Image 1 (cartoon, rainbow, N blue to C red):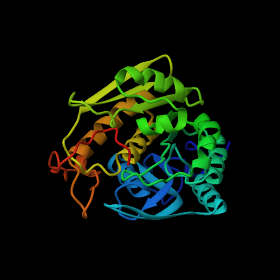
Image 2 (image 1 turned 90 degrees about the vertical axis):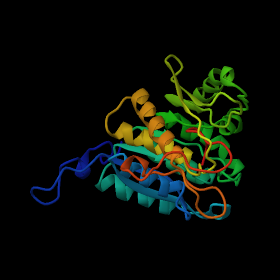
Image 3 (image 1 turned 180 degrees about the horizontal axis):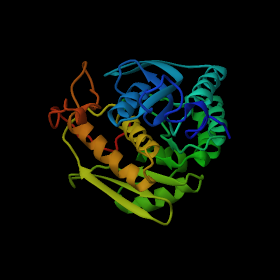
Length: 304
């Protein structure tokens, strides 16, 4: 285990700095790709972490050329660059929770999983496969590494329904299928899983998720807003969970609070560019003005 993880070492809250300096807020690390349009990826993660009162830090795994219309290009970083960023942050500052997002390749998945296996901090794994626009963000060859290396180190995994199918072969077409989907994901080793129901179709008017560890079940329901501007929801939910875990909340408490935060962000989602705009990460800070305009349906569970 690394001495810098989970609030130990030089990075311990209140340690270091000038005399009389304020104690540091809880520290959360995102290991993910960069979204140049600012709606998803590490940009969404860091905004979420700030909005929820934590100090966000980043390990960039890939750079994307991305806007409201889609992903025009993606370039994974070398494994050694990812390892160096992680060690730089963890060994000095320390972390109290980690969130993973876009990891792009089998080599990066395995390198990140190995780093996280040595951490005492809780890990939230968002198994990002495709972007909101359907652009691939994970090589097909990396799926087995996600199953066998990354999911086993997860405190919480947050797949949407498409990612459940991609990872397990299970197709959840209704709430009745959520338990079976959760069992299939839990078989790969995460402690908890959130099956996100934002991709369900229907007229219930609710966005429904299932949080379970195989014994406890928590059904999370929120209004489904008629707002097409939902770019970044998956990243935002996972980062919000990590932020709440860093504050010392239990997994059910953290996921419930994160669902509430991302529901508000979707309601305040705004138009940006010619395509799908982002959720508003600053809605709770007073910028949000209710549900955004536009056709289509968003939910607190849609993927970025």
